[in-house]
Image (cartoon, rainbow, N blue to C red):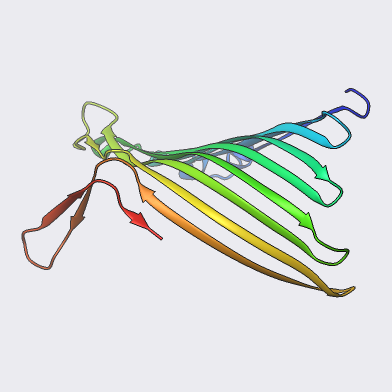
Length: 231
């Protein structure tokens, strides 16, 4: 859009075979549906000759219906913003903020079991890394990242008054993951490059949660805890 400064790219896909299903002389097939679409876009801006910034997004929606028995759909939404700069002739710095969401719904269409089962994951992440070209052949990449998760394990609810399904709600889970990483690249020959890397990660549940432990006996016990750290 702005020469040598701003570029915008966008695209999408749409797919459906419902018209083809109607050609099959089987009622269950004719009552089935398959739909899909996704869209994506990117904006990239040159702030200076050494620094750039941009945003990206992706959105997808899939729906499938099997006769009059069950319907399943899931959606994905992701977006990110980034900044890149050349600190010096041999150092390049990058930072990126990422947000994502995934949700799915399973719809049981049979009247006696008519219900909706919903689940999903939301996450927010930040990642930063520094690339150092120590020589004409050897380069290093060092970075840090952190991701926050909110997980919906699953909720069930009846979708009509005749359904025998009882509502069930499982509390949300919250967690934080952090990591440090490093990598070195060393070309051995023009067609062979050696990569060596090391990563350290930590994962922690956030907030109260309930962990149920089942035994072979009829009775069961459960353990309640706050924060769990695993390295």
